Length: 321
Length: 286
Image (cartoon, rainbow over all chains, first blue to last red):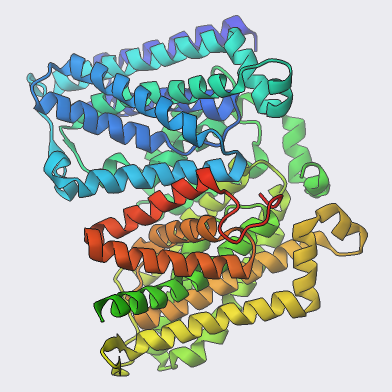
């Protein structure tokens, strides 16, 4: 598929999402909001997990902090959009500060550390009752104007955030920064040796991966009107986002959007049809994805698929240590 | 006296943590796989023990070896058929795969066992050691946990299989050249990891109620213990477990029980940054 065609398809996809209020039910509009939201989260994760190759599982920490920063700012009387901006800046600063510490680890340790961040932020938020309402959660001032207006507003907001994240992705993909990040992904020591400022680049990638999560968290809090620690800092979300990226194609520009849309639709379908087994089916999807679609939907090839189906991939155990 | 009580509580908890984490640590150390299934394996062990006791009246002590054996088979097959195929891929792939398997197991357990907390009640009375009070079932749990951990240590030190696992851990290529079938060792190691999880679950069912909602909490404990103690060795898990148990017990007293968990995780993050090899770790085994 040529690059121009991909952009055209992406534009059509955005238009399709944006026009849902005109032709579809509220249920579909809600789905469109969720797709836009997860697309933006997955595009964000792609900076650190895709371009840089660091297995980060801290998405839910950034999202949750965004929820709470935005909600608290709004409760304190800040206008909604300013509250979102505040949440964005707050989460970005948090990620940059955290990045200087946590990015010294690699591989498995980084993965564990980033999951630990989600747990610690969740526990701190849920035990700091005087500020955050603890386990009871927080009520956020609702937007006036009834369900239709609310849905349309937040659809627009989520799509705008998604487009911003997409624009930054395209920029990073073509810039010196993206080149440096890809060098780090391939061989960090070598990248360091040839003059890539690895520490700085990693911190930038980590901050970019948090930035939009903060905005989305704050917007999500305003949209739903109620947040609690378990919902905001969910381990399921922190793993779902990388899975979406894997599904679409890690380290690509369009992969995250394709993955997020496909995964959300699949999940919705399973929720609707197999209520008792929806988690298990999700698990099966993940297993199939890992075995048969290692490059994601965008890198799908029949030959690779057939080779894998015929079971001739065992010998590869020796390839990498 | 209160301090001694706190310490005793911490040690009992720590022994359980060590038993809970040692399998996870072994799998991580030898296979380089973060096994997200571990928490669900523990709960599966706990449920099997409970239902053996509840439905068939089998004493938990008698059920424990069978539960462990069942889990070993499940672990071996999972590794042999599924995880071995991607075992040398980057951590993102292996972690995601085990998480997918975890979703499946978790879902099946909630459907077939329901999420109601279940506990084996043995009513063994209370042990009173000059002011230190401890329910006897907890003492029993601690003893069993230490026994299982010690058994694993003996197997790792003394048996051919144990030596082969250690060899694979140290240098996979060299182990392969010495005629060790690495894929089989991987499957055995994963089986042992599941076995220890099952045993830990059986022990937990004697001491605390088990429910599927605890899988994440157990997995979190395993992370923390592993990082505190150091990867892939029995001693590491034992040290990590005891340290975490005592720290949680003291932190619970000082800051209130709701902060005990946070202290554990913060300790983990600090150690990850300062000393990622863990307290007993050797350099070069990262």
